[in-house]
Length: 90
Image (cartoon, rainbow, N blue to C red; front, side, top):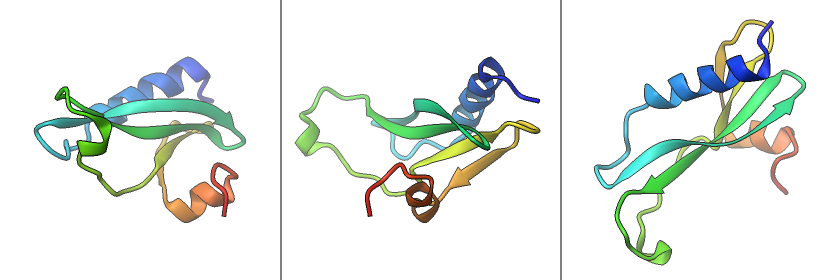
């Protein structure tokens, strides 16, 4: 069984393995929260340049991923599942 500190380490490794979307941006580990199946983490995009937010590029993709409590496997969460988990309105 995976505990919170292990889930955070697995999440950090998952983020480190992701291809970066653009030379001026990087994928970072966003907020984490415990849910019934494990720990959910947001994908966060960080701009590496000092430019106003309204001028930054926008990137699409999955909102986040779950580190499963039982075995530590990572499952990417689609937008529909994100809504089903109660993290979004609509």
